[in-house]
Length: 335
Image (cartoon, rainbow, N blue to C red; front, side, top):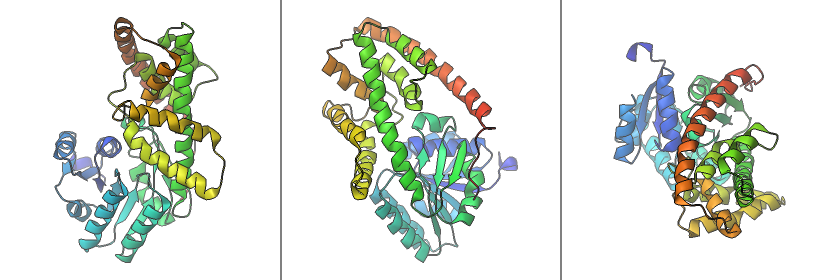
């Protein structure tokens, strides 16, 4: 590993997304130094080849290029404070979380004053997509710093866009997540309609994926809905609420009507009230099943779970093949 390492990259936050960044960067030949407040996550990533440390400053000291993937604005504030206090030479930090523009701007100002460059670089894609490098990096900020980070981004993602001024990455992410929120619920709506009509949910899943009505979210989440199995979560309903709140604020600030997005809010709220907060967002299907009076028998559920495991494996292979075939048609924006 040491002989082929490209350069040191730091990853702060080793959860579903950050952990996938780190693992894929190791696989792409980078030396990766990682930190998370959870010792269990540090141990898991150490087994994957990441050099883990117990302090934020130690990551920043070891790597000139950093990626942060964090659960809350408070976590971002803590990371920024630790990097500033370390008084290190200039660093480039790619902030990959979904926060408000105000939170990102405050972090950028504090790091700029300390001589560092913060990029606003949220990701388009789920945790399951992150695991197989099927992400799109929505980069914004200093163009030279983005160009410097591009090989790093492509070490864990399939595509990267330089979207210009700092904050444009987040703006694009809000739009992408609005579509994710809607497509997830409408996928559940379609699955429940099929079940209520007496169709086998796996058959509905397979046929719709092959036709004109499919979407990336349907392809990722419908197999979970067919199996009635929402763990492990690629995005927990409880955590997605933070993203939904950010999108709602963005929509309201711009004074744009978003009736379809607004219609999904009570569905996600109902899922949380039903105790599904720690399950994948695909569990909104459970809410719609209850509303429709759909009841699944334990025996049928067991059979569907086994079938969904096989379906998910074949879907993953198809996506990898499709990604390779599509590279010739896709083009990353130039820095």
